[in-house]
Length: 264
View 1: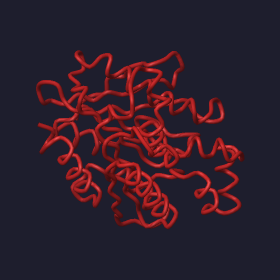
View 2 (view 1 turned 30 degrees about the horizontal axis):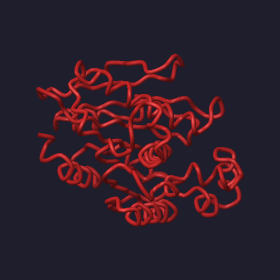
View 3 (view 1 turned 180 degrees about the vertical axis):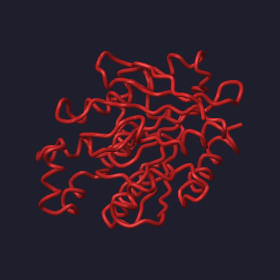
View 4 (view 1 turned 60 degrees about the vertical axis):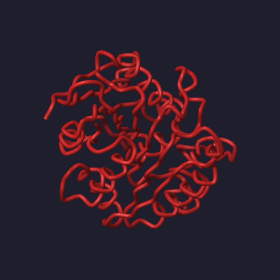
C-alpha cells in the first residue's frame, strides 16, 4: 500500500489532504475522497481505509483524502469551499502528482457525500478557483444525507431534525442554498452514482437527488446495497475496496464506464 503524502491547501491545520500515488505510470485519473462525520467530526485518515487505498491505487487511480474545517468553528459553506480548494490545489500540482486533469472523480461518505454533491452542483464553490462542476467527470456518493435539506429535516423527526437545523439553519433560503438538489438545473458534474444502504431516509434522499439531476440533463444512477441502519451506513464506507463488499463492484463498473477498464 502506498504511503500518504500530506499536502496543504490552506493555513488552517485541517486544510490538509493525504495523497496516495498509484504505481501505474503516466498521468492517472484522480479520486478525491471527502470523509463523513455529521459535519462536526471525522478525519482524512480513519475515514479512507486501507481497502480503498490499495484497491484504487492498484487499479490505476491517484487517490486523495481531504480534511476540512468543522462545525461549529466554520459553517457548511466554508466546508464546501475547502473541498473545492483542495481539488484546485491538486490540479495546480497535477504535473508533479501525475494527475490527468481531464479525469476527475469526487467521492464522499455521509456528510462528505453531501459536500461532494454540493461542490459538484453549485458552481459558486469551484468558480473561486477557476473551475466549474462540469470539470468533474463523476461523483460517487456513499449513503449520503441532506441532498434535499428541508425533506431531510422532516424525515429525521424532532430530535435529529433539530440537529440538522443547527447545521443548516432554520431559514428556508439557506436550507435550499445548501441542498445539492436545488442546483441541478444546469452545469453539474457529468455523472453521478448514488449508493444507499437499507435506511429509508437515505434511499429517499438518493432518489430525490437523482430525479433532480436527471431532470437537469445529468446522468444519475441509484443503487442499494445490503446493510441496515447506522451499522450499514458505516459498513459501506469501511468495506469499499474489498472484494467482499457489495459496493465495490458497483463502483468499479461505474468508474469503468467513465474512464475505461482499470483507468487506462
